[in-house]
Image (cartoon, rainbow, N blue to C red; front, side, top):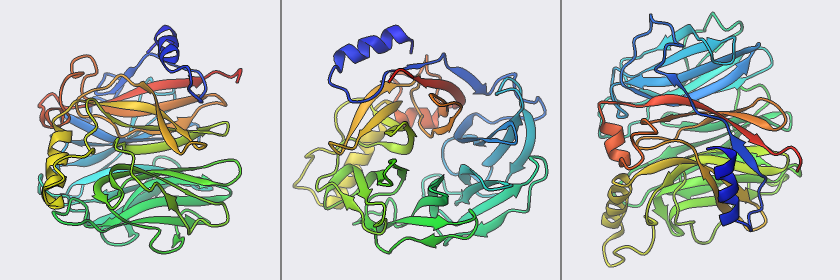
Length: 388
């Protein structure tokens, strides 16, 4: 999206509280001739992670035939010494089970890649083990080791306030009845040994939780409330005081908009988010209240899957405890699992996966997931106005 279009967006949203910004042109990285020819790709490329380490840009992503679980799924790791113009093969992680959701973490002297192992049934969600591997030079990778709790899924890991923090979840995700998913906040001094902050911070229908800290140390998080709880369906906003991270406050009523795959980041003291946007009516409004909740849940999830999606940039208005849409990224069909790194004071690199952005604008999420055309990995630069 160019600056002229963004100015039009601002004219429509004159009361916005966020900073002005521009996007670069989008670049397709996977598949492309930038990659080594020796690595043969299947159609589905998703779940991407990027990180800077020892003056190289590292990228890991899930590659498989489709979006759904498969024993042929693998995580491919590559690195670039020229900001993504060309890539070199690092390693491939293949376990004869589904693998997904890679996440990089830079410790004092190592680059750690975390991911989780799932099952092989394409219509079931079967998280099994949290796994990780590490390198000290970008070329030699350690044996894969298990960490965390069985069935736990780590969503976001960050170093803040001289400590490492991570959000994760564990429980009966996609359960037919009432869901009991525990959201966990962990801390670590070294990025390897982790301990829980508090207990029962949240238990209900929220799973993926992206988080960030304000300059005053206040904790802010957005969680996907896909399975529903007493506050409804959609998304939750959590906050906690800097000295009370074990005591979360949440919205009394969930935001009816669902922000899948939320990734939070900060520019100045403003918090932003990259997440999936549902194109169409709010899927979690007052729908079929006379039906049992278990049936109502599956109607909601089915309708949601049959509508088009985008990956979008949002602002977290902490004064109003509200998520504000800013702009869509070029995207469509099966999309939204972003990774974000800060390149300079005002510029960020965003990696994301999507069906072909030019061909899939009106393609439903489910059709995009099942399409034989697959998905690719795209880069785009986000630059905020430095005058503010």
